[in-house]
Every structure is written in structure tokens, then in C-alpha cells.
Image (cartoon, rainbow over all chains, first blue to last red; front, side):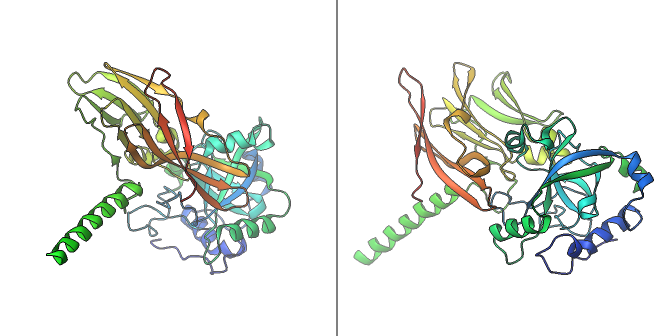
Length: 184
Length: 194
């Protein structure tokens, strides 16, 4: 796969409209389409997390790279692999090791933990909350292409989409990046 | 004659403005390009990026290669295969007499840190910065990063990069003022009018 297609263009909702990316991601990884089976889920480690989002409207994110090698056909003019809605997430690597493959039931989404953000601030802000508790996986920051929307609209629509509760569970399918050696 | 003088004056103004633009925007076309100057003006000291894990920044004495201070890179753990690339995107800002130096890591979505050191007689002492700034109300993330750099021998221009809880972004500008008298303290002047 050289150049995965981008989602269908309706950027107001991340999940269903990013399915093209998600499906390409699954194909790329050799994963079966569709949600994982209960047997599979039993083998994976659950973490309680907080879902947030980030977009390309961030003025402090000049490189706009997910630092992932998965999407080999999608690189910016500096050669960095770029983020794609439906497959790119940023995490706190102290909680979820870089390169881990996660499954997010809330969005029926697999993603590689390949990007990061101001994790020190995340920890400070969420200390005492469940995502930074003993079974917490920190924040799962989903990349959400903004299109013509401003950053407040992106935030607002994301909040409406996920509902009142930003919190949920994820499963770590593979911890760390060694899984690629077996799958790719 | 007046015409030529006017043209000369305009050219000089243009040069000044061009220089200002260059120094006011710490990000060039390439966000990974190093900023400032890693070598001190007196030539005695230099910052290098130690690329062996864990990736770090080292202030060395150029004559002896003695390491005066070692600072772990934020991206040593967070950057993965990009750790070295991100670390090399640092900004080093020396004051004129090589007695103060600011190390500004790559600002990657408000990740990375800003450090200040007082360098004297072959020693480097950290000057705490974080307690100078208060996290703005309603902010989710913020970090202090270099803005224009040194704007006078005792004033360093910084920007607070802020992500608000409503999803919007904001920059606030300030100057760190170094009191070189006996008190050796730092103060912050807010400069929000820009």
C-alpha cells in the first residue's frame, strides 16, 4: 500500500467518516476488519483513559507529524509521516509505551501510539483523575483534521460527538513497538 | 542628493526590519532547524546534542571538552526514532558577555522545556524559570518558549504558548529581566500588547 486514501471529507465527525483511514490501517497491519472478538479482548490489557483531540489548527505544532512510519505514502514536504484522522493518536508515553497498538472500543478504532504532546501538563491537569490513576492510561489524544473549522469548533464538535463523558477504556493489543516485527 | 539619502534610509530601515523579522520568528521554514548560536560569544563554551541514549544537551568548555552541565532532552523518551531530530531543533541564546544562556527545546505542541543558566568561571548554575510564570486560568496546556531572544543585555523575550480548555490557542508575551546586582533575581515583565 503506497498511498492510503483520506476519509470521505466530512470532518465534523471523526469516527464513521474516518473509516476509510481505519480500514486502510487495518489492511496495512493485516488485521481483520470489524470489531475484535471477546476472546481477543480477554487477552488485552485494559486501561482507563481520557479522550481529547488535537487538530492541525495548533499553532505550536509546526511539523504536524505523527512520527509514524506506517503511512509510507503520506509524508509532508519535509519527509515526515503525516497524521490521518481515524488512525493517529497521541499518548503519554510514560503510560502507553511508544509504538503500542491500541484498540479503542468507543470508536471501534485501532491506532498506533505514535505521537505525543505536552504530557507533563496532561499529568498535572489530570492528577487524581482516573486516567492518571493506577489503572489509567493517561490521555488518548485523537488527531482530527480541522478543514475549514476553527479550533473552538473542532473542540466543540468533538465534545458533542463523544457526549458528556470524555472518559472510557482502551485495550493495549501490543505494548511497545516490537509487534511490528511480527506483523509487518 | 536628497533622493539618494532617502533611498539609503529606506534600505537601512528595510535591513533593520528584515533582521527583526528573522529574530522575532524562532521558527524558520524548517521547524527542526537549530536556533540561536550554540557557541558562546567569547568562544569558551558550546552546547552540543549528545546523540547516544539517553539523548541530552551538554554544555562543554571548548578548550578542555569538560562537561559543565548535562540536560536530558524531553524528547529522549518521547521522541522515539525522532528523538535526535527533535533534540537538534534546540535554540541556544547567549547574552553578549557569555554569562547567561537560555536553552529552548523544540516546541512540539507545547512539549519541551526552557532552561536558563548562569555561566561563570567554568561553572554553570541553573536559574529556575517555571516558578516565574503562573498557568493562566482556563488553560489546559502552556509552556514558555523563546520569542525574540535577547533584546538587551539583561532582558530576554519569551512567549507563553497556551492551549485553552475551549480548544482555542493563545500567545502571551513577556520579558524575563535579569537583575545583575547583588540580588541576582529574575522578574517578569508582561508584554501583552502585541
